[in-house]
Amino acid sequence: MDFSISEEERAIRDTARAFIRNEVMTLESEVLRRERAHEPGLRHDELRELQLKAKAFGFWGLDTPEEYGGMDLPAVTQSLIWTEIGRSFVPFRFGGEADNILFHADEAQRKEFLLPTIAGDRISCFALTEPGAGSDVANIRLRARRDGDDWVLNGEKTFITNGNDADFAIVVAITDPERKVHDGGATAFLVDRSMGWRSEPIQTMGEGGPAALVFSDVRVPSRNILGELGQGFTLGMKWIGKGRYLIPSHALGIAERALGMAIEYANTRETFGKPIGTNQAIQWMIADSETELEAARWLVLRAAWTVDAGLDPRHASSMAKLYGAGMINRVVDRVLQIHGGMGYTRELPIERWYRQVRLLRIFEGTDEMQRLIISRDLLRGYTKLGGHLE
Image 1: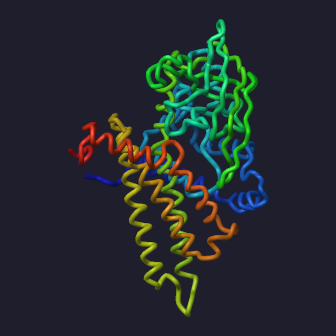
Image 2: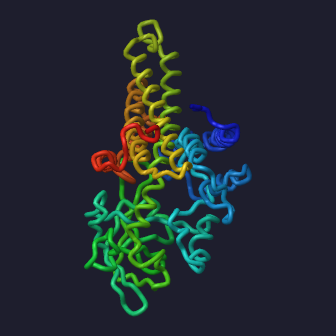
Image 3: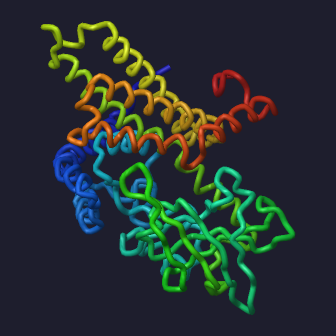
């Protein structure tokens, strides 16, 4: 059994690491200053400039098929890159990406939505969650009523990432109230902001923030149905499932950076005439954090390997998401404790991480939903104890 990464994977990871270190981390002081002044840490034009610099390095469309100009990287390689992105708190991501379900677009939709999104000329958001339907996706209520060759949308979506910036939304709406959502009752629509929906910012404990989207008699032509009529639930689950191993991949990078700061501080901060790292209480926090970090790393990489092996990744990804989200919350809490009062200030990024990582236990599948999936798979015999070794 070989736990090493290939030379190609190492080369790609190291190049990504160098880019993050040289082009992204250098912006951290300014990002913290802006956020303390309640300004966006990174403007859209600045993000765009960074993405084009990364494109010159060869990083463009990590998951995008080569026919669309992307890298189409294996899942394990993508996981390694997202770990590198996580090393910096600057809100950066590589360009050339589009929502995975946009590749279900027809030819006309590809020209209008998919290709401009990959190029960075358009911004999308995925609108599934509603005030009364978070983990319970089957409870969505936003209605699409047929009117001739159009559909009229009424309702509200909430906690929508990119909802304040997007110029079009992928909206899952009820099209057949007589059928259940997961049995053909919902459909996905491509809805331009110019068609009449509006967004309202939602203030959260983290930086940036999601939006509520309000639809009041928004008229959408039938040609804007994504995929097929009644396919909304299937596409929604495909969208959510993609992030299950990438989210904890990002958490690994945060944990490595934060733990490294804690080790450095423990070796230099002195109390009672000696470094605090000589105290057993500090040593145990560092040891526990490193152990949990490594355990999460292999759960994440196994989930990514499962994707590359063509196996059903849902069980492995749920375990990676559940454990990785819990791990990063515990690690950042210990790192803040090791730094004491300085960790609680906004002069360091630690309190920012403390607020940021709490979201990881909620979005794209709460801890409770991951536990439900994992236990259900075992109780119903969908998977066996011992995983892929059995």
